[in-house]
Image 1 (cartoon, rainbow, N blue to C red):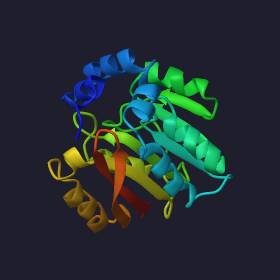
Image 2: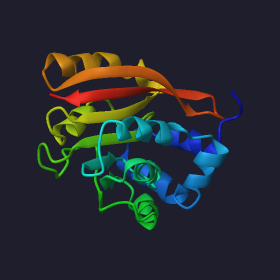
Image 3: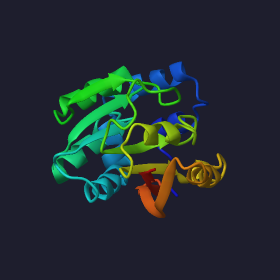
Image 4: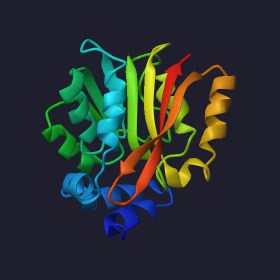
Length: 207
């Protein structure tokens, strides 16, 4: 693995404080797309979007949870043109997402809290780059599944650094035991290719 990008190092050093997270992404918003896509070989948005696109249609409404600057929304729009809503903790990142012109609605939201969204509101949900060091823990998956219809897909990336440390496998098994979601597939996938990072690509189905 090469030398990690200093902006990525700063993001991975976060300890969950919401104000610290907002500050990091306020500083990063303007250069985020180039830094990640070009500088780091960030392929996770394209891979996850392709996975969800195979499960939905252009008539569906999906939630991009932790949408950031809209990299995932752009990929989804290009692949199947569903109606996409996005939420993110950072208002500065949402400004960049809005400029891409692919979202129907964009709102600030904290994924560690209950979302202001009704049960069964969406036909699918996607979350890329959120379940990582110092950002959001595995319990937030429950909330993502809550807002999609029974049988609807959830496509979620979990960074390799936190998969074992934060107990994601156990949490997903517990979700299945509790009748919250079914695990369709968990597979290894590229994440930041130039940084040498991978992720677990989790495909769930709301129960």
